[in-house]
Length: 336
Image 1 (cartoon, rainbow, N blue to C red):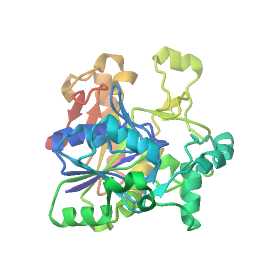
Image 2: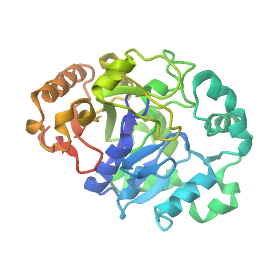
Image 3: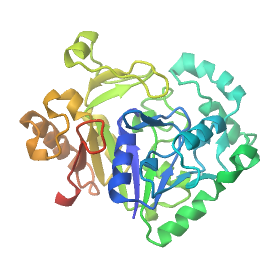
Image 4: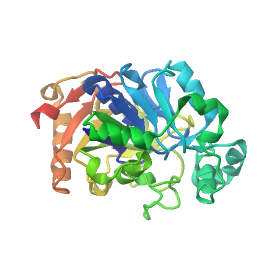
């Protein structure tokens, strides 16, 4: 079983929580980080945030892999390996692109122009394309962890191992999305790209889960269909900051049209919705769909009905997050 988790909006949807939950409940033998770089932060639970290693570190029995499509800052990845004590079960692909100090300096133009985070990820990808990047096999400090991720994933897939792939950012940040260009990231951010990042073809994929937040959030510049005023935001009592940048996120209403596009672009088989407890205050920690308030049930049922019309592959919303803790999750997979 190979599952890929992707974002449906502009990142910030809560993929880290979803991956952490799936890693803890489904016991995948492998959790693979695909794409992005240290600019793509994931919060698994309160106080547990990562930017380079997979959010599946939460399961001590899962082997962790960082795929070739991921850009690596050696200092950051080694710190996370140490902080979460995963040195005995993590592998970094030989071919990961390496961020150098000059890449951070070169990214300042993008910080000012399109709101990039400034970690150097984009310029490092540019050097990869120009065939002049340093790759992981050339970095001495990474050598204890180097593996061929594509080979490991391929062998595990052929052996029907349980593999969970953690994509980064979201559909609206895809480099190939002309609607949002140039306010996009430095790669495609859909399931097909993440499959390529880890070295597999599309027929190896069994499940694609798109994660949506119950409202839309975005860090940095760029278009956003709905944008709450400061008065609306205060009335709802929601304030968010980027996991990596610390910048205030812009917030707005759930975007059904964008959600439809994300379902189609990813050929999604299922969806997860997060942060319903933030938007609907009386639903924190609820673990049974029928115990959610009617307002939330109607909200989710309406989204579900809308999205099911978009793709023959889409089974429906299967996971609902009602709080920051992994156990604050309604799991509907067995009822669909």
